[in-house]
Length: 179
Image (cartoon, rainbow, N blue to C red; front, side, top):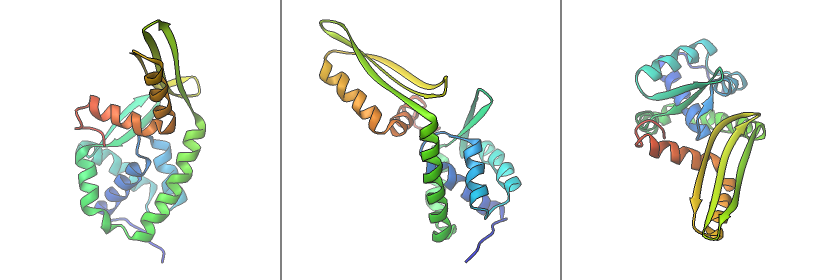
């Protein structure tokens, strides 16, 4: 069955669902790509609802190097979990399949840095980062007391950098602004 949504509430929920599906700050172009690949909502409706969602503090955003990244706030995640079933299951599944493809594309455009080096007899420096081309999206350097801890940190970051990035961002924002 083909669907098309133009009710503002449904469009907002679909927008929240798409942003949530990435589980990390998502470039606006990827949100619109998902819509274009699964045309159940008008591009302009999504565009206008993104602004509304930001004003209502359901979505937060930041702009770096002319790219806007969107994330759900805690309030946005709660709203989505409460009303998600308004979006038919088949539509949600189609969006999730498209999001998986876009995540693969995004991961291929990102490079992950996860390395450590010995500073002295009792200290190792761990450097973790996510880069898009030459642009640094996220990086952190930490000092740890032993090589095993350094190896574990690098391995954890490599296995799921988006999850760890999301958790760090959520902690830094006191779990109020990012889900």
